[in-house]
Image 1 (cartoon, rainbow, N blue to C red):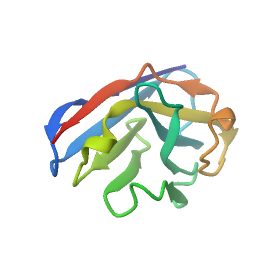
Image 2: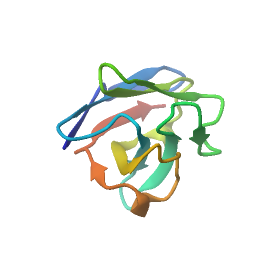
Image 3: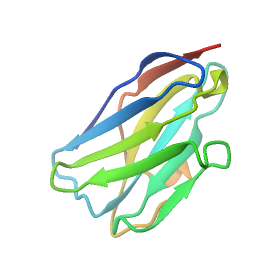
Image 4: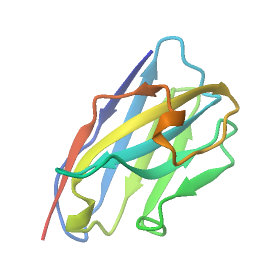
Length: 125
C-alpha cells in the first residue's frame, strides 16, 4: 500500500491550496481516510477525515468552514481543499488510511494503518 501526497507549497495568508492523496496497492477506497498535519516542534494533529462510505466527515474545529475533504473512489484519491489559509496552518500534511472496510472517520492517529510521506504547506503572513 502506498499513499502519495501532492499539492503542497508556499501560499500567502488568505489563499487556497488543494492537496491530493493518491492511493495504490492493496487498499480499498472503502477504508476511512484522513488528513493530519505536523508543525515543527508539535505533535501530529488531526485535520479532517472521511468515512469509508463517503458520507461521514469529521473536521478539526480549527479548520471547520475553511477546509473540505473529499474522495474520488474510482481514481483512488482523497483531496483536501484548504481555503482562507492562516500562518498557523503551516505544517507537513499527511494522508492516512484505516484498514477496516467501511470504517468511519476518526481523529485518532493510532486508528490509521497506512501513512503517506507528507507534503509541506507554508502560509506566509
